[in-house]
Length: 265
Image (cartoon, rainbow, N blue to C red; front, side, top):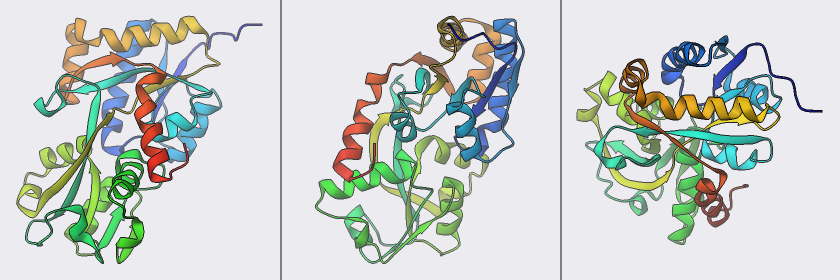
């Protein structure tokens, strides 16, 4: 028997908290486009948000590519953001920028032997999975660092570098750009020594248990944002050019990089 359509949809995000305000705006936009209530569930910890999405208690969720590929049996990717900055070349991709203090001598990843490395958390592709892959490709491993610290979030990794608790970290390029926009002085304190990627952009997903018609309507509404003034304004406020439709095969690169780096996928 087909699953019943929910009376109201729940939107959540497991991405950087700095985008939660934008996600609330997106919920309001989708409510108008779909003609049904859309509630943003952004107060619980991200682990609870992910659990809600997997359990079908949330119906639209923005999730990192690494946990997505682990959950592809229960989640369907619908669309992914395309950032407006030129480096993204109008594609749903992003990068991991290896950041250090401006005055420090490091010039490449190999220079960080013995240094203190911060990462956001082990379920992150940009902060953890891609780093493991790049190290493996160079015949190296996490043990090259003198200390490895889990910071809990990209913004926390940045603060640890600024405070001298860590020497370097791989930061999601979209998070770094947002922080630089909010705090321009960071550009005088930090610099990037390497860039990993491009990698597939974290997708907006829906539980496969959600009726197919609802999933299709959500995909169409996201991809269609660039076609109306309200949607274009919302995209612009998020630093986005558009939303691009995506499929599971678009995330095969993350699976490959996970296998190279010895990360569970």
